Length: 214
Image (cartoon, rainbow, N blue to C red; front, side):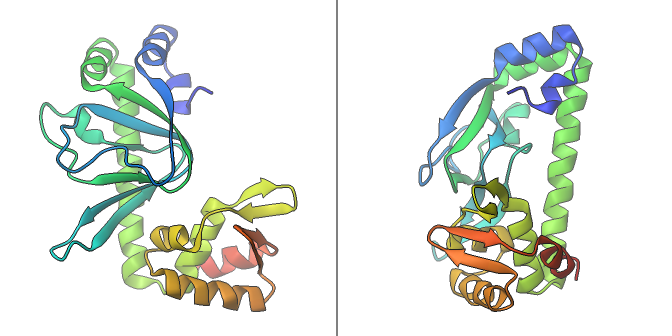
């Protein structure tokens, strides 16, 4: 599976990008990087969700963002020096691509089109971060959760479903597990969703879209 940012490159640049990016699986409940690690690798999410977080003064976890398919993280690798400054934790088993700083520098120096592709990916990350901050400031939990459910739903055997845990959805929506469980119960009472074992069936996606737009 070739990601869009590589597929759209000219043939020679695409061949070089395919050479420097390597695929691997990051397992749920592991860590891809730590704050003190030197940022020597850039990551691209092919499939899954990765939570980026830091620890606060009382060792409490502070979620910075959650990145999904089509997003990059570890962008410190595009800079000369520095550390990641955050934990990267897969919320599910994730399929990722990785490339070393040295390979990225050579790729970008040879092919301006590749450099432009990374700028586009970074710009999208910035826009998503700004949108998340705006939602946390101005939206209630219900529309944030609706938006998280819509972004996480996939076609399953019984229809549209979400296989993330309540805690994972809390990370996506910027809330707590207890609050998310309560709001999910309210959506189930309205027959918008159906709660099951390790999965949430989306019965009325259009109703969720209306809630998310509030």
